[in-house]
Image (cartoon, rainbow, N blue to C red):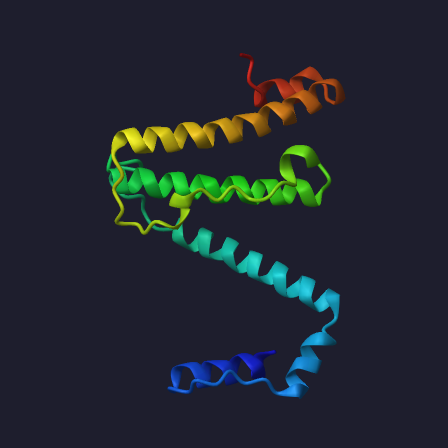
Length: 161
């Protein structure tokens, strides 16, 4: 796999236009042990966790939530990714499949760059749309938990509205 990636990088960045397709490497990929692949995926997850820990070992900026439209837009996108991540994790556990196993939520604005500054009205519309999805999942989780868990276990985590 590393050899195939190296060949692709060389061909791509050395000005080559041809994507390499060595038969030996393709057979090697096809014969990959699912356990090894699972380890590789988990390793990437662990690396991302480590990056998060490293990043948060530096002092906080003066204001954690500046009221700049660019920042609020980036925060909204981060919540979308977190929502999609939670849905995948819940679905893999078989929890709330009706709510968690659907296609990921990918609003058109998820691909905007960090310098995009939507109007406050647009940000409010986006936040409302996202809130509806998040709260529906939350309500479903709490509805499932109430009869299964003790009151003190679900009550602090669930809406009382």
